[in-house]
Image 1 (cartoon, one colour):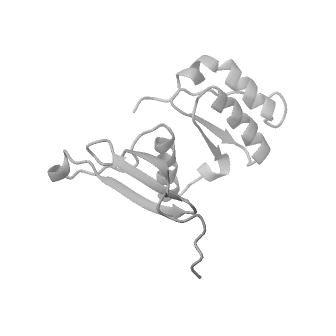
Image 2: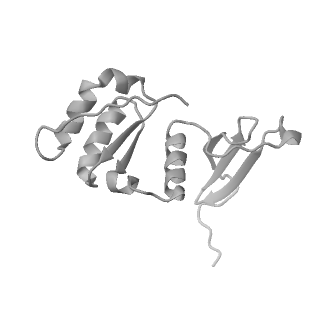
Image 3: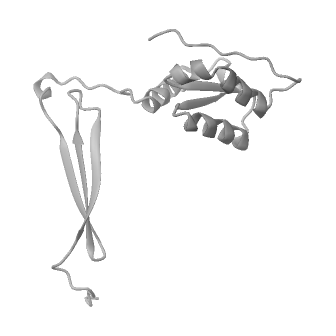
Length: 154
């Protein structure tokens, strides 16, 4: 893991405003663009405040993680562990890794069929790496031609 880029800024007034964060993201646009994930530390949680900043980062194609500063003061190890797992998932890294040498060249495939009216929904899933932690999935719909349009069984 490499050293993170730190982009600190001083608020214009006594409190950090939403505009301060947006200005900082624009000021450090080059660093933000090279980042795998941007962590935004907020003084307090504000849903609309977070939504606008997240929207700006999403438009730039950068995953983001928001943390309230109070949650960083002596957090239990489980909180930090979950935070790291979340960030790893957001950047496409593995959260857990499985090492089963006898299955190193194995693909796990799952298929399920569920009736839905005149359709049958077919869900397919298959692992795509040797540690069995990444997968491809797709949902298909198939018209059931053998089933009558109206089933009168009660």
